[in-house]
Image (cartoon, rainbow, N blue to C red; front, side, top):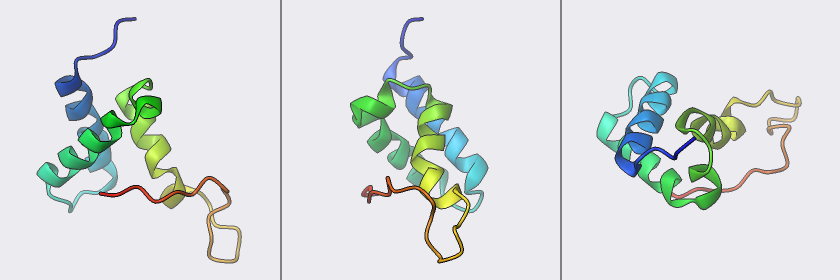
Length: 78
């Protein structure tokens, strides 16, 4: 499968992010998606997979202590 052109990947990723964040300005989500595309690991994924991976720290179930159960939490500048 041939990779999507950057503009399509970013648009698809921004759309997926908007499904999670209905109230965020779509242009801001496009900026976030552009930042995700710049990450080679995320760019190798489909836009939906990349968005889900990036969202995982905020969508992961809590372990009762107020922290996500994943140990892979990392700050991503927006």
